[in-house]
Length: 118
Image (cartoon, rainbow, N blue to C red; front, side, top):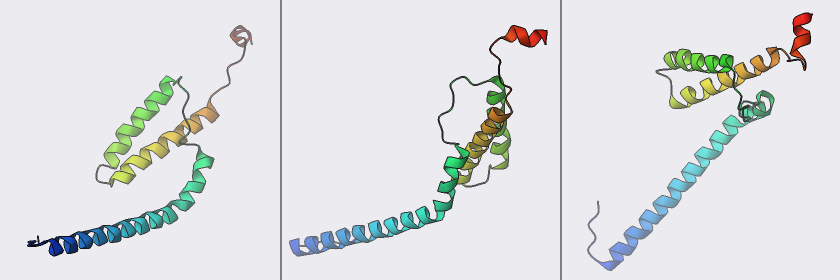
């Protein structure tokens, strides 16, 4: 740390710190722009997968069991991975599994009595 002895040194130090802040903001902005450019192809996948869509409130036991299974299994496998990977992979797997279960889910008929007679 620099020892400041008079007002001029104080003003000079303040300008130096303000310039350093401006430089750091520019570096941060450039880094964020670079990250946006790298993630742009993945942003095109989001509407296709619909993994960030709000889920229905009536979760079935199968959905809950799948979610817990993914958390346990993937949590163990990704224990040494980075934070972003540990956050993203389970989210994607849960989204994909819920889409698969929604596709494979049998349609409920309007009159369950007729289903039993058939």
